[in-house]
Image 1 (spheres, one colour):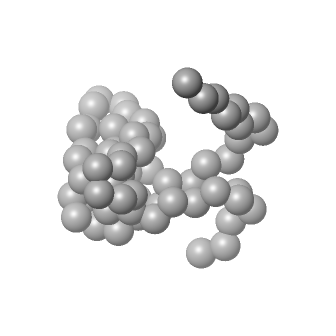
Image 2: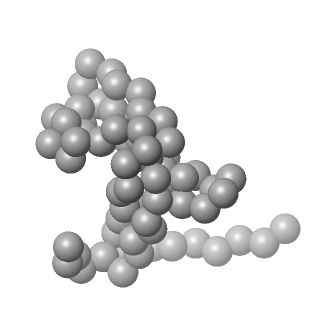
Length: 69
């Protein structure tokens, strides 16, 4: 897989919630660290997403903010 996005995080599908149109996908990218994405139901089906499957969270953004406490 080659993509132009600079940020891709490999993880394991931890949980999937299917809706009528969209699907919520929870990827665990490290123990206790999760990324949640909302994608179309048809995209989730095309990707064959199932719990336990390896997948990537690909982040493409023009702005990234950094904050501290």
